[in-house]
Each structure stands twice: as C-alpha cells, then as structure tokens.
Length: 157
Image (cartoon, rainbow, N blue to C red; front, side, top):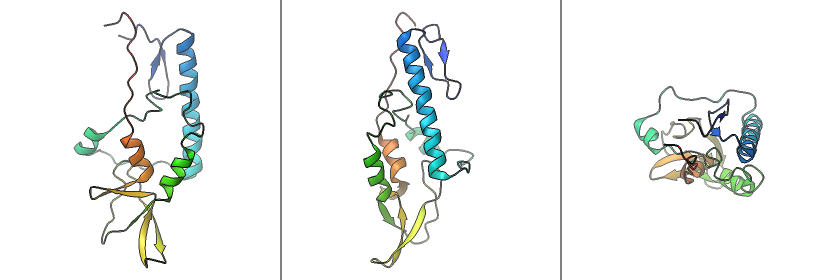
C-alpha cells in the first residue's frame, strides 16, 4: 500500500516518495510544521490548544484539510502570501448575540470580546457569522479553502 511512499512524517503521517522530489517535499512539509508551531506559540503564548472531546457529526462531515497540509502549495506555504489577508480577517468583528456563549465551531476556542464604543455594544474580534453560526474568521477561511489531493504513486493499486 505504501510501496511508492516509504518516507513518513513523524508528526502527521504524510508520506512522500523516496526520490529527490519526495525528499524536497518532505523537507518543505517539515518546515511548514515548524512555521505553524512557531506561529501558534506566538499567537497563543505557551498554553495548550483547547479541544472538545468529541466533534459533532455536522462538524466531522464538514471538516476539510488545510491546503498547506495537503501540500497543494507547499513551496509558498507560510511565506507571507496570505499575511495581509490574515490580518484583514483578524480585524473582522461580529456583534455578540444576546446570550451567546458558544466557542468557535471549528477550533472550539472562545472568542475574544471587546466593547465597541461607537455601537455601545460588545463584539467578537476575528469573527464572522455564517448562516447564524459564528466562527473565527481565520478558521472559516481555512475551512472554506479547497481540498487538494496528492496524486497516487505510479503503478500502485
């Protein structure tokens, strides 16, 4: 089954071929893990990422693969191409609905709240309302990104 992909990432299990291109792909993939971990530590400090024990069936069915993890654009992943877009997403706000206490439906982290002086009401930062469900804008952007599949090795079945 893995005859064409003998090299395996120790962090996520991604497999690559044993040729020069496969080694380059694995190297860029491991660099991506490093950049993601550094970015995660900078954004959240050094605390662990909170996760629910179980994902609801709707979230499980709607789950997508982050295109960087799927190696669709591994050469340019995390090298500033979306930094401006991410900053714009983080600036998006949604007014807090009355009695709303649910965390983000994707990452299960609570929303950052701040008081909007102009509207004289509380708002969520880095948030977007999609069909009545509130998500972090950055999580929703990742969730909505297309899934990129890796080609299968030649000659395997």
